Structure formats: C-alpha cells, structure tokens
Amino acid sequence: MAHTVTVIPGDGIGPEVTAAAQRVLAAADTPIAWELAQAGSDVELKRGTPVPDEVLASIQKNRVALKGPTETAIGKGSKGVNVTLRQTLDLYASIRPIKSIPGVSIAHPNVDLVVVRENTEGIYAALEHMVVPGVAESIKVVTARGSTRIAEFAFRYARSEGRKRVCVVHKANLLKITDGLFLDCAMRVAQLHKDIDSTQMIIDGCANLLARSPQTFDVLLMDNLYGDVLSNLCAGLVGGTGLVPGASIGERCAIFEPVHGSAPDLGGHGIANPIAQIRSAALMLHHLGLTRHAVRIEAAVLRVLAQGDVRTVDLGGQDSTEKMTDAVCREVERSD
Ligand code: NAD
Figure (cartoon, helix red, strand yellow):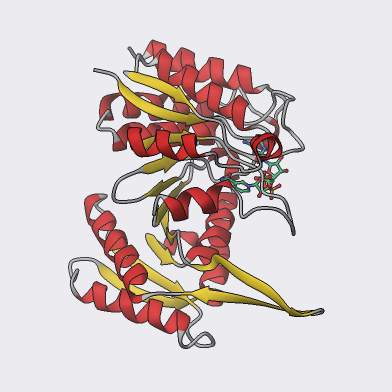
C-alpha cells in the first residue's frame, strides 16, 4: 500500500528541486502518493499567512512531509514557515548528516559527522522586542525538558546509527544560565549512555576545529542557532548546501528538507542542484521503512557524483537541474 506524504514545494528553487526528487522517487517505483500543500512567501501574499491551516492539517494527518525551502523576509514580516512548522508540530530534533562524497572536490576528505540540533527553543523562540528606540532585546529560551529530550535523541540516534561519540557544543562559559542548563542536561543524559563517548566543547573552539580537522567529529549536539550556523559551515566542508539533506523530527510528525534556502538568485532558471532534496527524500524513505528504495536512490546519487559528467553551477559546472535529475533517474533505473 502506498504511503501518503505531504509535499510542500516552497519558494524560489523549492518547486524545481522538489519536482526533481519526486521524479527520482517515481523512477525507483517508490510506493508514495503525494498530497500537495502550499506554504511560503507567495502563499503569505495571497492568504495573509505563510502556513495556512490546511498545510498543518495535511502534515498532522500524513505524519510525514517532503518540503522545499521557503523564503523568510529579512528584518520584517512573519516568523516564517520553518519556525512555525517546527514549533507548532513540535519537531524538536533536526538532523543533518554531513559526509564527504567521492568525486566532489573538497578541502577535507573523510568527513562523516551528523549535526543534531534542538529545533524549537533557544533564540529562535523569536521573543524579541524594541525596548526603546535604538535598544532591542531578544529572549533565549532554554528548558530542562527541551534540552534533555534533544540530548536523549542524540544519544539514541548515535547508537542506532553505529556512531561512537557525541560532542555537546555550547557557550556556557559566557551564557552560564541558558547554555549552562543545556550542557548540564546533556551531560546528565550522557551518563545514561556510557557506551557512547561524550565530550563538550565551547562553540568557538569547535568552529575552529571543524574548519581545520572536521574528521575529529562524529555526532555534534547543539542548540537551535548554533546548529543552524554550524550545519551550514559543515555543509560547506563537503561541497555545499546543494548536496546536504536534512530532517526535522518530532514524536508524531517529521519533515524532510534540504539544508539550503530558496536561493532567490537561481529560482525559476532551472539550474539549482537537486541533490540535497533528492537525498532528503531518501532520508524520508528510511524513516518510512522503505529502506531498499532509499539505498537504491542514495547509491544512484553517489554514482552520478563520482562519475562527474554532470555538474550544476554550485559544483563548478553548467548543467541544469533537469540534466542532473535525468542522470540520477538513469542510474536508479539501471540498478533495478
Ligand atoms: P540560500 O541557501 O538560499 O542561498 C545561499 C547561496 O547558495 C546562494 O548563492 C544560492 O544560489 C546557493 N544555493 C543554495 N541552494 C542551492 C542549490 N540547490 N543549488 C545551487 N546553488 C544553491 O541561502 P540565503 O540566500 O541565505 O537564503 C535565501 C532564502 O532562503 C531566505 O529567505 C532564507 O530565509 C531562506 N532559507 C530557507 C531555508 C529552508 O526553508 N529550509 C533554509 C535556509 C534559508
């Protein structure tokens, strides 16, 4: 029986890369029935909200969504699709697996790490206001419950993926109360998972070591803002956000989406790299228990990138989204 999955094409390059992922899943005969839901900045213009109720209802019903990137206005407007979905659906755990890909030229080979990010709290609670003109304030919310459950998730995830180490990243030397609580909760959870090595690092040192020696890391556990920033840095280490998949996971629902944004500079030109969205869809198939389909798609992506005949702009080439998608579909069909 087919799984019904909500698909949110999003803004900018979102519809192009999402359609590419849907084509690849179809080429692999994946038993998925798509239910279309529209969210994003265009929807906000028409409906006054970027996430209409029917989008939430569709995800709540189907429990799984594939989402394209959505645009969030800078310095004005609503809090945006991602924060709304993650907070409303309590998608508290973000995972972003970052791995070197043979054939993609990068500064550091053999990177294989996962960023686990708390996805609902921290400074992204977006509780900010102007105190008086010229003075703005933002509240960073950290709870013991939120910190403990993301730490539990990270250690359980590490074990299930055969990973050996979790490093808790923080700034508790300065943010003694908020990051202190996050670190304290994480280290308590670490005591319950002694089969996994646990360490902690101040974010400054972690950023430095990531740039110099990213192979040092296995699972990195951090709060919302740090996880957003460092996962993008890590994506850059392995060839860019056009390659890196992601997921936002809660107890009931999960949304799969690439690390990259809506790339307004590329939107509508048919030249975006669809690989991150195709790999996000493969992560989704693992989540749905469609492991054989997921492995087949992941292997096809790796073969296309290793051959190096097709390269989108972000990888130094000039090939289109369609050409990259064709190449992946061909490899998927060949492996039938
Ligand atoms: P971006 O990721 O959209 O773009 C950064 C750079 O990377 C641009 O040069 C872009 O052309 C390039 N790029 C991104 N994805 C690519 C792809 N698949 N193929 C080739 N090149 C690619 O980041 P930004 O410019 O900081 O943000 C643009 C918009 O996206 C903003 O409104 C932001 O809020 C939003 N955003 C959304 C998400 C999401 O929905 N998950 C994530 C990040 C940013």
